[in-house]
Image (cartoon, rainbow, N blue to C red):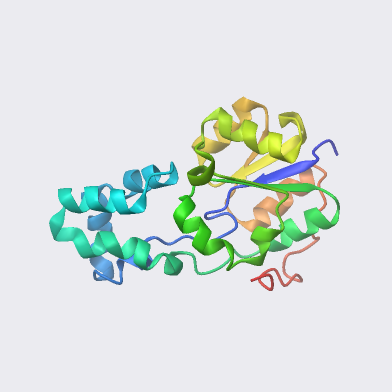
Length: 214
C-alpha cells in the first residue's frame, strides 16, 4: 500500500445534505424545485461556500426576488434540517482507516457560517487530522489550490493520497492534480474501491455500527 492518507468530501459523502428540507419550512415541497430554479439557488449557495456573508447574500437575493423572501431566509434559519445525519457506512470506513494509522482529511465546499453550526453535532468531524473548508480557507474545489492545501495540512504528497467526492468534476480535477480519486456513489462501493487500493477497510459494513458516532 502506497497511499498514506485519504481525503473525504463531506456533503453527500460523509454527511447527508438535503437543502430542500429547509425551504420546505416556508413553501410546500412541490414548489421547492421551481424556487431553486427561479432564484438560482445552487449558484447562490456556491458563493456562500466561497466565503460570502450570509446576511449580505440574503439581502441581495431578496432584493432581486422579494416575493421569495421567506423561502430565501428559511435556508439559514433551518439549516440544521438539511444535514440530518451521516451517509450510511462512511463513518465506519473512516474509523477503520484511522485505527490502522491512515491519515484522514476532509476537503469540502461549505460556508464557514453554517459549518460552524454543524461541526459540534457530529463526532466524526473531530476524527480528521486536517480540515479544509472553503468558506473558512477561501479556496474552492475544483481549484488545484484546494487539493494542495489539503495535502499540505496532512503532510503528504498527492501521489500518496486518495481523494473521495460525489462530484465528477471534482474527481477529475483531483486526478489531474495527481491524487488517486474515487467517485462516491455509496459506502459499499467505496469500501470495495479502497480495498482494491490495499487500504484497510471492514470486511463488511453490515456488521459495523457506523452511525453510532453521532
